[in-house]
Amino acid sequence: MRFLARQFARQTARLLHNPWGFAWQTLKAFRANQGLLLAGAVAYYALLSIVPLLILSVIALSHWIDQARLLQTVGRYLEWLVPGQSAAVVAELARFLAHRDVMGWVLLISMLFFSSLAFSVLESAMQGIFHHRRKLKKRHFLISALIPYLYILSLSVGLLLVTLVAGSFQALGQREVEFLGYSWSLHGVSGVMLYVLGFAGEVFVLASVYMVMPGGRPSLPLALIGALAAALLWELSRHVLVWYFGTLSQIGTVYGSLTTAIAVLLSLEIGATLLLIGAQVIAEFERLGEP
Image (cartoon, rainbow, N blue to C red):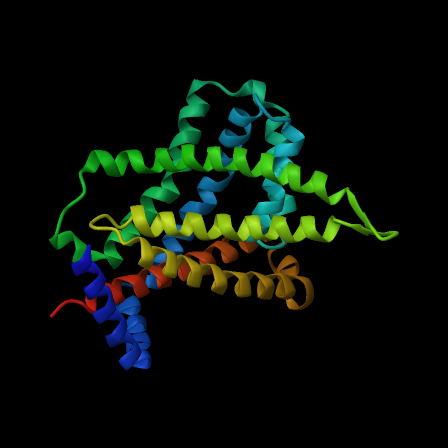
């Protein structure tokens, strides 16, 4: 433990000695690893996986929580992932759930398969970026096969917890506080708490990706730093996307009925690029300790 702390301190000192050189080296390595091509693959398979994953999660959790409440929570936090397009995705999700009785075993197995595609491709992309870790220890193929389904289970449990907590925050927002003859609504406080909950969940998911997906020896401090940086960059990017789609974009005129799919794919492409850049930063920081 003490050795790891000293190594982390040496790596940090090297980074602070030449931060611009480190940034340039990170971009060069990202380009050498074909980062944009990897991000495109992750975004494409995420587009295939997002609806089946949400359908499976909502169907499973609707045995304990009202379906309308689940869809409201899904819509709120989908806005973080696909800015400006969450309503269309939730509408398609609700349309399928209205005919959920047609689901058989073949459809269930195929949906499980498509739900896992994004995680499998993301793991391959991460292993390409963290190729230096493969010198230490190679992950067993059975573990790689199980990781996507463990993530699906974890995200479903996370959706359950977020729905319960968000319901408590919404109930809090309907209350008022009276003091010295004045009353203040807690609606604003409730909105801030929901935003903090979403951002914290975003950082937690990103940190788990940086910890689990690359394989090799994980580093919790580096995973948290990379997750926080990627989350802040995505926050900036998604606000720019909302402004672009709302003011300048002519995407509906160009693509017509394909508008939602193209807009969602663009958002996923930008998000995947930032995710992999965060991973590249962590990989380059780890290489600072190498001779």
